[in-house]
Amino acid sequence: MPISPEQEALEAQKDAQEMHRYAVWGLLPENANTRIKKVMEALREEYGGPEIEPHITIVGSCLMTEDEAIGSFREGCNSVKQIYCKVENFETSKFYFQCLSLVMEITEDLKAQTRWFAGCMNRPFPAMPHLSLLYGNLTDEEKKKAKEKVLAMDESIAGLTFLLSRMALYRVNFADRTQKSWERILEGHLRVN
Image 1 (cartoon, rainbow, N blue to C red):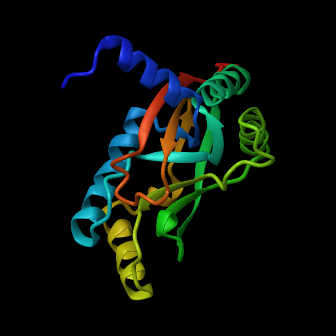
Image 2: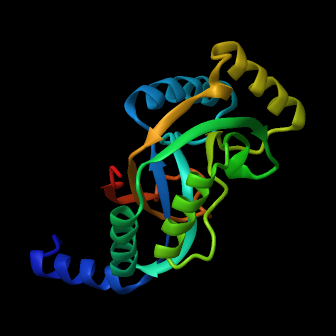
């Protein structure tokens, strides 16, 4: 039986008042996004894992209602200026969500802007700014080969620079490693100056 528009509105209102986990991602400009996506697709083809939207993790898991998350996210976008990012390292990790990542150089500007955004989201500190190329549980040997593959495809990736001007608020469920239940709630632009 189809749900009436009134019932659908009530369900949406109820959902907006329930607590969920949210994260804030910095979205890459188109030129960097295209470059990174090509590498990610090649890695996923060889090693599996979910399709990931290229992003810099700015704020990790925040437990809030949707209304709180949206308000906090908008405050962050209105308060934080665009962020210059430069890749400093290319790292592997034992963590599923950071299996193979590009780690950003921690400049004073990056530290200040991400800390401010985290504060808007009621977090005492931001996430380590990184760009995950692959999610997975790879062996050390597989990680080494994956890293070699990335450098063979794009040897200058470890020096990539770009300006972060857009953010996205996601509802996340870390138990769902496929990311199929993850939902983009809102996108916002950072201040120009």
